[in-house]
Length: 113
Length: 113
Figure (cartoon, rainbow over the protein chains, first blue to last red):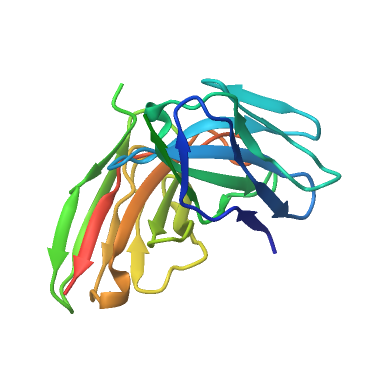
């Protein structure tokens, strides 16, 4: 079956530090990959996505590249801000006909001034 | 544009009670989903619907029921509440399945005591 493994948190960084959150996956076929962000007390919001190998998703300074050879979709940001403090979820959908998103367990990021 | 609206935001139930979690979307999405989120875990799919009158089980359907009489509404029913159903419940919707992102509500925090 499908599975997503992401680095465990919590992660605490100083403002302007570089962020990497690792995500690897197991899936059949050609999955679509997503990063969702959950701010305190809110639902999940789509941060970025990639639908095929070598695609790079980007949004709000965050980036992730779909690496089929390493089955990875690591999230990066060059300079984090306090407002980036949230829980980040990596997820996959195994393609057309798939109704289910498979989520990682989430990584809590805290950015301190 | 309200997106996905969930009510109530918080609820405490006694064991054996029943209740309905409401979910409505105004984006004319055909696909709707119910997830539960337990501490330190990703989201697990409970039920999903591909259109009015059509529903199907997800990964963890036991103890829940759903109906979909309109495109907009997708209520989740707990018939005999159990402590294991203490969780945060999220409703989501999407235009298509697969590579299309899901849009989430803000969640319902439910405690069974």
